[in-house]
Image (cartoon, rainbow, N blue to C red; front, top):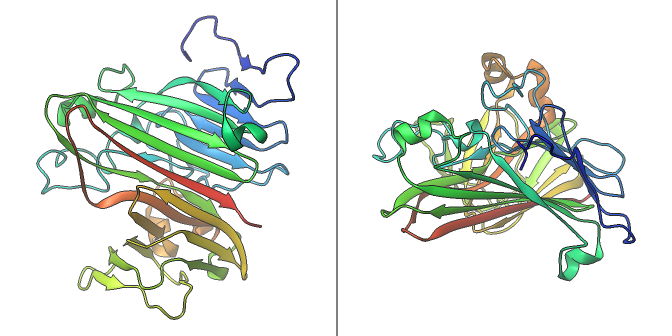
Length: 323
């Protein structure tokens, strides 16, 4: 749809109905922006189907995006919500994904925009409040697929990624279908960079007593988050794969700001590079930006999801604004 020669620059609502969301495209067709009639907005780069902006009605940005992020398709985007598939990090010991680049190829492929749904076409609760859903697709036959995918992961697949904006929440969901004759293993992650004012004032609840893998402490990586204090804080480089029981809440200065709810995602990665690591990452700018971001990343990454031929893996996150 997004590549049509005479594609309209704006998709509008049906005449005579209450005000609905509008969806517009950039001049170069590289990104899609949706705005609710109440002012909330979301912007998605077709490269990686990466959410690069989510603003509330007052225009306050909720996602952190590096000042040096590449938005031209030359490399994965640093910030926003990149989509990780079919491997988290690297897996040199896993036969199917050992040759894939870090975090796979979904975030480095150009997705197709499949269309929008608004509250005028939705049912149930969503029909009673301003809502817009944007759908994106990527398959093994897609022209925008990263060449490394077919070279190093030769399975037939079809991904549908949906971004749903409400007045107080953003939902990102994925369906990964196996169209191959053989089963494949995969890992999936929503690599969400939340914007915060000061990381030293951030408290994370919902992780108490949860087991986690500490990627920073190679000598003793398998740990359990203490039950007390109930809230976890960030005081240095942090890279942990948690398996929490329920929702995760991010507060700042004692005021809850975000609640992250998961569907079929058993893990939550919590990441902040802190000062030294931030200085070492070329596209992390400003270097003091680690103070203003916290990655809370729902996914299925502690093990492998085996998807049989003709079957699919589905997962979703919803980030709800609390302040």
